[in-house]
Image (cartoon, rainbow, N blue to C red; front, side):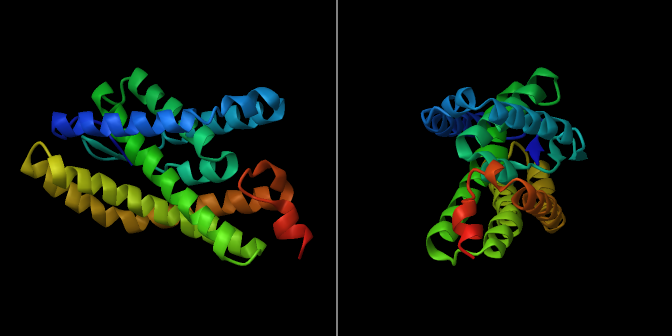
Length: 223
């Protein structure tokens, strides 16, 4: 989901923009391009994934004039490429939406927050939990990170969008529509979880070395 029109107070748009660009700056400070420059195959996979997500974002339902419902794929990108490269992909996709006129440019910051920073952060936290606290089991990684992580990141991102509307909606009708939108979250969560989990399963079976957050020696060779 993402905002298509400015229905949030200007001060909140500016605040979201500052938070987003600060967190993106921290992600880019990790210098994710070093891994890309060192691995030609990784360049091809990352660019292909970014283009695929860009195309998939075109399949959206315009619930109301100011809100678009679509799958984010942020959790999948985060698990496969880790957060810095995943956020870079989401930045490119959001910039493309602004350039093509689908989204007003003042919404770039809030959309980066809702579709990039928040779901990526949730995914990283779940991955860290699995990595440090749960048994070294392929099925645990697959279901907790892939399926459950994608569903939870979608839920938190959706609730964040509703919370932003409750905090700074420009009019009461838009706030009412945001509350109604919350009812669609149970429909978006299984879709995001199923597609993310399915693609993660395929990658873990055929190309586990492509998943940057997955240690095949730890989860497969030691079984």
